[in-house]
Image (cartoon, rainbow, N blue to C red; front, side):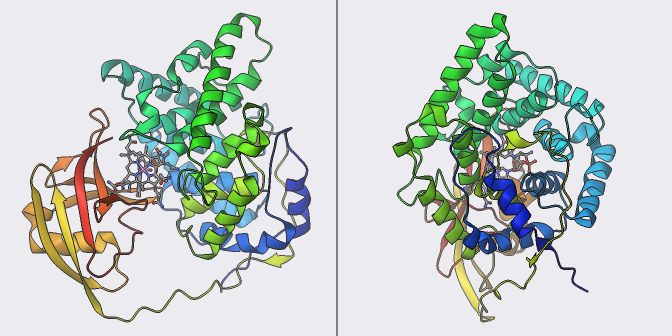
Length: 429
Ligand code: B12
């Protein structure tokens, strides 16, 4: 039988209407709360196959005070099993997310959400990121989004990190904030959250005043870069970076004027996009939800213990049925571009995703169209084509394009159209 989960409407409303910090916020209105139901459905109905995905979901649910004991137990089990099995294989950011999720809504001094050795392990992984930067032309093992998660988790859970080193690393001119010359709003947003945490925690330390001033300036400059990415419809960067950007702007309202960001407009566009099904990936849903309810990752250990509420509106009322697609075939053009371009025409079922096209092409010719993928918190990530493997030390990756324009979704979720020109291109970021 399908289980029914409910949103604690009144409790929830009170919870997020009480300002948790003195900064500018706008949140979904009481009347619009039910528009968030698709996000919760996506998160709660997920299989939690990936540790970063499970941690994103748990963190998000805990931040908004949406707790269901059986769901929590299920996610926590998965995370803990995963961490035990491949502790050392987790990337630094994955471990940071686990710490944030397990530690959310507990008093940091109680250390009850997770074993404190995870924080020690994160310190080591963060050092390994820096060592890699020193060896490989300033390129971390992962990326600056994850380095920001690392600093945030270390800052919130009393880990060791150098304020001086943090100030050096997070200079807004650092190339790691950019992918192919484009400022990454998600990365900038996460960095603002990390720097704000460091700033607030170390307010009183006289000897660090110089570094703290530097951190202030960097935060201000990152906030300016985020504001420059506000689009006509209010989205910041794109729909998938808007959640992180909103959180960053919530905690940094002293760095911009009220008329520089129309938060209500952003909120309204996001709410409309939810109804259009933009957040069907659990990680996407988990990353947008906290901001819509006025929460940020800095609220993670705000001394509130977990609240298990009695609920009164059902959120698992069936969502709108997906549009029925006729079982007809469509033809698309598909190319692999390295120096040369290798092309083919592929026939797939209407409603297919990019990955289906790649698989069909691979069946035609494994040498030219053969590829590998890895599961990630956003679904399948393409790691190699023709045996040529993406490498963070060289900043190389396989870029997805349609009609020559980069896609904002991955191979597992981008639905292809008849006659479309799809391409996977060996690129540098
Ligand atoms: C860093 C990053 C990259 C780096 C990854 C390599 C590196 N140095 O780490 C680069 C620049 C190469 C990259 C590429 C792409 N990215 Co990217 N990326 C990110 C970013 C900023 C952080 C990811 C991260 O580390 N998360 C934290 C860790 C703990 O989670 P994780 O699951 O272990 O992380 C891994 C995956 O996220 C994976 N990854 C990165 N991007 C993408 C995109 C997709 C679709 C998938 C399945 C996996 C994936 O790389 C991470 C490190 O191994 C996110 C922003 C965000 N909000 O999450 C965007 C983000 C995930 N990327 C996105 C996109 C669209 C892409 C591309 C499809 C762009 C394109 N047109 O080609 C490609 C992926 C193509 C492919 N080969 O499958 C979107 C996904 C949106 C969606 N609905 O699917 C995001 C949310 C950015 C955005 N706001 O649009 N990305």
